[in-house]
Image (cartoon, rainbow, N blue to C red; front, side):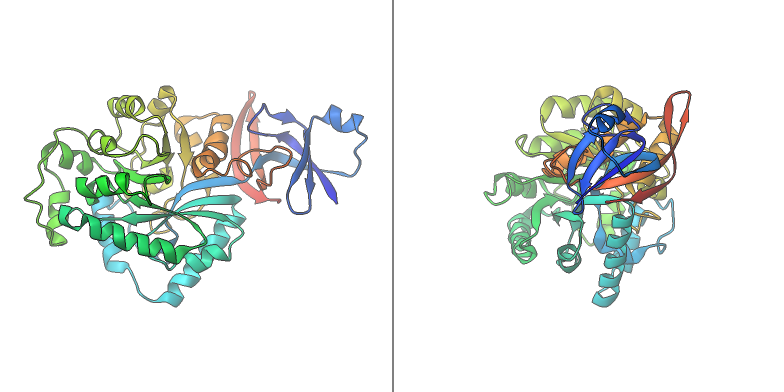
Length: 392
């Protein structure tokens, strides 16, 4: 049975918005048609349900940490990344029941907020059950860490064992961050036959100390390594920013997601885009404000024409898991057009995750989820309202 729904505007994403557009949708959410009101009238379609608002595809969250859901509200805001990392280490728990319940709630929260696909960071196997039982599509990024070059092969071996335990879920083995992965471990990731063809995600320039460490071997990371008991006498600063140091260690053949980019400069972006042909830049603005009280230079990224996606980060660093809320923050702070925000929160993320045949746009044959978004139209400009509702 096909239902027909309409709204003030339909945003297919792959084409211009349709005022009073009509969507035909089957009971399982598969789209059968996307029509102008004139086309719907010509086809004599009856029983159309009309909504006030915007009909848009389900949202794609390219960066989340489901494992940290139990830490909601437990870490103070504006600690800076180094304080945040130390808090995470102190608060991690082995109580599986508490972890499972928190992850189930977080998964449900994302579903209700219109999220249909997630790129999720994992360091353990604990999230497998939640993901297998979820209506949300998950691609798991299994992180490896090891700044000691002598542990590189051991780190890869352990990660491959974890990856097998995640089956049949989609999993990629990825580096955590440049300050936690040695050059040798980057090489193992690039050259290992079981990891080099996968999607790649890495935390990038989330704090000023990251660039200080790579440029001058200075800053707060030196104290963090002491706390962790790591001897880094072997390490020599590259004299370059973090991004310009690690990016040449990655394969240009892999689709690569750079996450956060809070302290990324125009020179970094120009270097990266010239060096690597398959980059995506993920923004998690609410987490950036929560941890560092700073936002990336979004206008610079837009002007550079890079492919931007959106993420929520974790409930340890965010009050809610909502791509809609991330879009609101970006529009408030940067005045970004809704069309651009919607692409960042839908099709760009779907393309990165390799699921654009189903998600990311309103097109016949797809089952992308359909959200109803509140809005105000001011002088022809679409401004996000206060609410999103999942319809399909």
